[in-house]
Image (cartoon, rainbow, N blue to C red; front, top):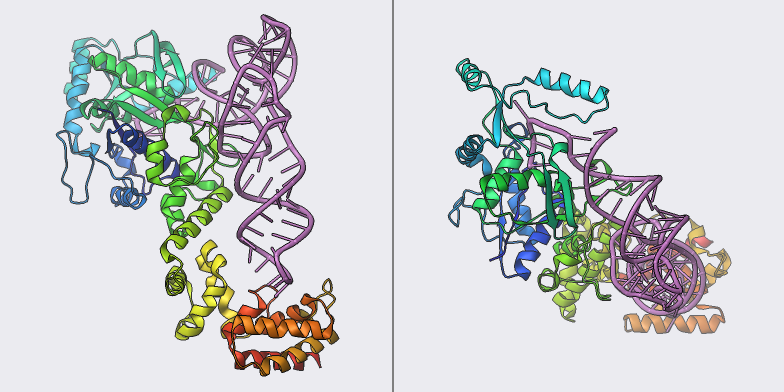
Length: 496
RNA sequence: GGGGCCAUCGUCUAGUGGUUAGGACACUAGGUUUUCAUCCUAGCAACAGGGGUUCGAUUCCCCUUGGCCCUACCA
């Protein structure tokens, strides 16, 4: 039975890089009919953040990535190796650290921070790799006991074997490190908490994780973990190190260069489908010439394969995210409204109601029609809906030059003629629909023997007071006959 | 300094021992019975460099260069 795990440390939010890792772990498990575990790696007491774990779980759920084992909202655990929160398992790690010391694969280190700092400084100065010098490695038993009795604080270090450590990474192939180049890692800190390296290996083993899928930043510490599995005599899981997500300058994706928390994207109005779809394609694609790019989580569960994951890092490109969001928003919208006009109005309203002004909300009839004319813009960015439709409620102040257009050959005189003629024609209109308005204005174009733009532009400008707006027929229709005539009169005054 | 990973358009990428090196985003131009947007069409744009192996390398090997990651009692 294949089993993967996502093991974030609760720093306050879910990082988009973490989301991608979680997604691949989830997809790999689903694809192989295995299980997916969430485990909270909170062994660093100094970095404790209130509510971070709850937040992480909330975001995971929002994304739709359900886990088979892990911390649940009601704090109960499934399986037989919970809790899935490491800070609640400290005794366990202590036991395994002791076992390692008995086997001679770990040792107590009493060196002070000061000594360590000095040592590293000297090593760096001599252009040597800063590494622990194993001063405490072969301390005689009597001396260890003496220090222990004196209550001297200590850490437990892993004794890395000086040999070649090889492993096969599912994404990178054969990788090898020599033990001599690897530092004796601290496994248990002086406060008794384990470090990532110990807790991670112990838990992965106890939880029967078969595939360790994690970020590339862990590649250099994998030999330490392998040495640990070997020291315990445990079966070594498969490893897959994912390429990093990058800033535009190709450095590891960081807070400084934009939003990094999934929550921030949620708050900005990005859909979960879009975020997941986008993130899935950062470092992976279905391959074999597939040109489709829009896939749901369910689709991906079928399609995913770890072999198609890239080796090189991928720049986190917001423009492409926006595009995915646009595709998904439109797709979902069309699916939901199902060609039903009433549903369409309702849905548009729901999408942007939280961003509308009070004045706009009061006139519901006008509002619904208005929203309809800026459908695409709402779908692209619901936040801006209010600004796009405000001219329907109150004609903005504009300069008379707005009624003119050099390229379309509309000067003030032409604008005046066009508007006056149109007004007369519209006034006589009995049925007020987009069709009849269009018909009426088109007749004016023919009558005046001018181009479409020479009539349509000044009218549209007069009705909207804006340089950019929806089309002239729909505006007139939404505004209604009376207001349309009013606005045309207002424009005529400006031209005289 | 040490160790490791990586390298196709600006970005995400497909692809192969012989291809006009394909797609998407972005960008540019034109069209969509007025403008912005949408939509459609077209265009621009890449195999890091040098050696091999080979009839033939973007593809396989080596070197160089470049980028990145790790090098904590953080994960």
